[in-house]
Image (tube, rainbow, N blue to C red; front, side, top):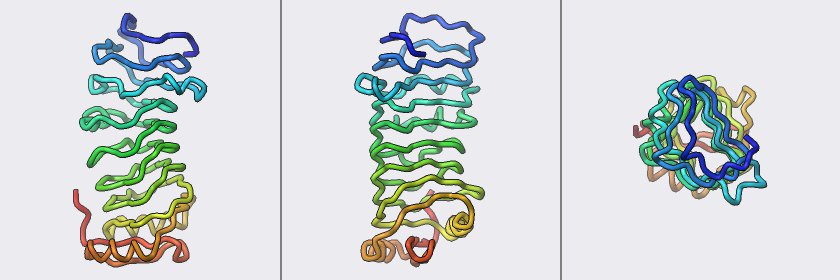
Length: 225
């Protein structure tokens, strides 16, 4: 890291290399034909905010080639979306993915993140039809709607204030969320009562209060998978 690499397409890596850091370089693209170390377990491709104007704009291709990848950091880049096939390589990440400080506006349908996922400081408005990661950082996103999400036991979330138009999940996930209110999760969301009531009626659900009534969750008959 902290060099002046603008491209890495000519790099030849040692086959046994397990951790690679490319942070602090003026990279703005990683070519689809880029070769990578066969045994790679940790890949860090992020830039300091002072270099964000020319940082990575697309997720490096061929990440599904690394069955041993445990940590992936793409923090503080200019990513606007994740590829539709991202589950093919997300499933291989055993520990964590860092996507904070990007320009993400939406997530692919039924995306499956690793247990530790950081999506803070993006532009995401909707979380829909997905299992939320156990350790989930979502602060500083303009969230408007959370629809039919699934919540795992032992979850820990970090959020920031946002007024949701709707928030729905099935009964099992609601029970987990209810228990989270007695833990250390920082859930700062509130729900607009009028829009939430209309949305819940359309889903044939029942509104249930949480967090001293500040959060009203629509409990639906069964989350779509």
